Structure formats: C-alpha cells, structure tokens
Length: 161
Image 1 (cartoon, rainbow, N blue to C red):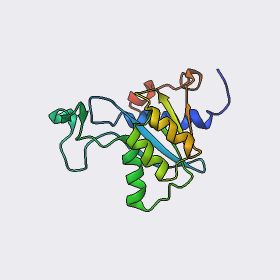
Image 2 (cartoon, rainbow, N blue to C red):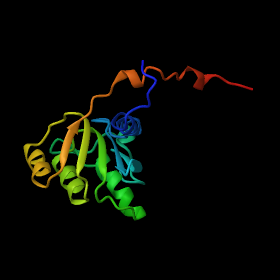
Image 3 (cartoon, rainbow, N blue to C red):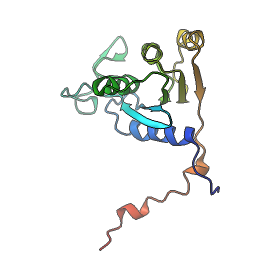
Image 4 (cartoon, rainbow, N blue to C red):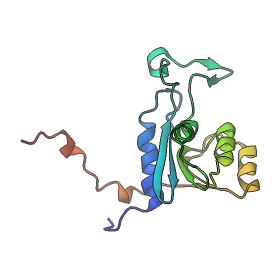
C-alpha cells in the first residue's frame, strides 16, 4: 500500500462513482464530475427532472428502447453549471460510462476538452470521431484498488459519546 496521496484521475473518478450512487434510473447508474483547474465545479447523475417521478418509484418510461424520463449525468452536470453561471470552457469531465453521442456533443460544445471515463458503454463511432476532430481527448481510467483499500467505513456505524 502506498503512503502517497491519491492521484487526481483516481480522486475525480471516485467522485463520479459516488455520484452514480444517487442515480434514480434503474437501467444504468451513471455519475459525472466536472472539473476545472483541479477543482470540482459540478456533479451530476442520471435521473428525472426535478419535481417529476423517479424511475426507482414508477419504473422507467421507455420509448424506442431509451428511458425518456432520465436526464443523463453529463447533462445534469452541465445544466447545473448553466443554472449557476459557472463556465465549463476548458473543463474536464470524469464520467462512469463513455458518454452517449448527444452527451458527447453537449460536452464538446460546452468547451470540455478532456473526457475521462471508467467503463466503455456503446461507444458511438461518431462520438469518438467528433472528440478527435475538435482536438479533445477521451481516456479510460482504471481505478486502482490500492488507493481505496485503506478506507475503513466500519467506524461510520459506531456511536461515540
């Protein structure tokens, strides 16, 4: 086990994994962390529009094999920045699954130039082409268990006085 601090890619991807735990669509749990200058500027997970019912409560609303109730994690993170007036130009995204074509286009249009992902997921060839065409990059991250095995969550359940 290392005594060094967790590398940035591991740290930010772990944040995306944590966000995915909030996902309300049962078809796929996805989390996304937007980062600028080594600072988290927004996070998102896939789920319903605020105020709508959630897939975990009423089931998915599937049309043409897609849950149309769900806003993707990447979009939710971008929309959080838009809502709060936070620039995403030259930011990076850490997402648990390779972004779909629509999310890829939105990320690139918002100025994201580095896409880090944990899992391949229906990687669209046109999305891959667009990423290269605009001079952005997509890089797969593999979480290193070395940085996570030293965590002990047992103490969270202990009551101290």
